[in-house]
Image (cartoon, rainbow, N blue to C red; front, side, top):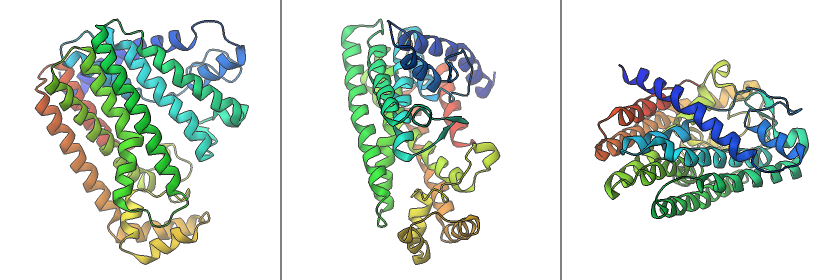
Length: 339
């Protein structure tokens, strides 16, 4: 069986259980109807009227990292299922708040929570998702010492995630952001969650310290590689595949290709200092300038280097089993994706 087929088999087996666990957590106990509708709507389980739906809801990559890491370390993936749900709920908490902070009106082709029900209610729903993520993790039927360590990793990740978002928001009003600052930001906003997903899976398996640390490093570098690949797709990707109505350039996002080019071409720096929303002709012009200054090539190279470091960490973990091979296949799929 090829690694890609093996990975698909794991997805088919695990994802329905992750989603069932998430449904159990978010629908537990009495709730006002609209409150419950908002939670289920954001996760793709319901439409805006509360009727059952199967809307696009993300690829569930992060919970898969948790379950595969647990199984690869010799644990029972079912014991890590609550943690996998917790990771995905925490990720979705961040998306709800990001949509408000970034003024995004659509997510996965549907109106965002704040667009449908207002900012205040969306913030409250995001806060509920945050709390439910913690309750989900506490459901894990494992040794209390292992669960406590997993909780510590989870809480540190939450802080890192919000620091990353803080930095990202602060970049919006600055024209002097450096590539080094940007890389620190994505370590918090993106890589902290993928690192925690892998580390928690290993901890709940009762793994030794060496594979726990190696899998945390694998998740961290994989998250960085994923974000840098996303930076490239956000400018040069096919909108029909990425699902983005506007490129990152139209939205004024300061991603690695942009920042690298701005450090080398004053015309790119001047464009971002000027501000304002560019028209399609200006987007095409600035895209060409960024590519000519080496922004695209640099981001692609940095993504590949991060990916190589992720694979080196996975190799160091010494997990030569089906789940370990599926982790490698997942890394390959994320970095080579076109959407």
